[in-house]
Image (cartoon, rainbow, N blue to C red; front, side, top):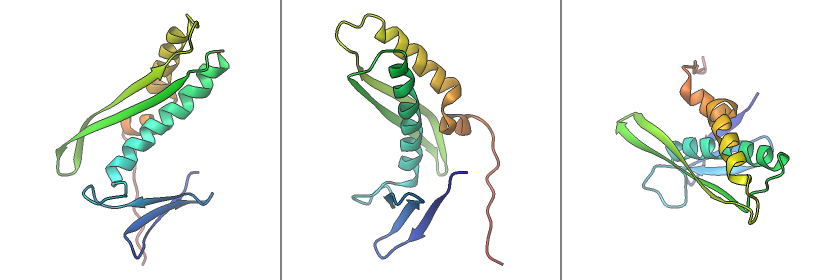
Length: 132
């Protein structure tokens, strides 16, 4: 089970995990923080990259650069349109199979292996528990 705690602080809001990592959260017009939508996009990009990288490396193709830009347009007050993950990759020099292996792995990860992507693609239940 994954657990994140989100709380109001003196400076805004903050998410923390059990390993001590912290992320500042705020509105899209605030400096130095991620908006909740940006965190969602970061989660998707991070999920794909941390899954693609070891699978590509296990196949003997260590990418020189692996990055992604994740975009989504807000199409209504509380709705996003299509989310796009655009990869930025530098292949190892002289490795003629790296592009093919990377593309195959990235497609499989996007289609099936990324938990965040799968959660966004499939209907799921989100429950709220309020204090009594």
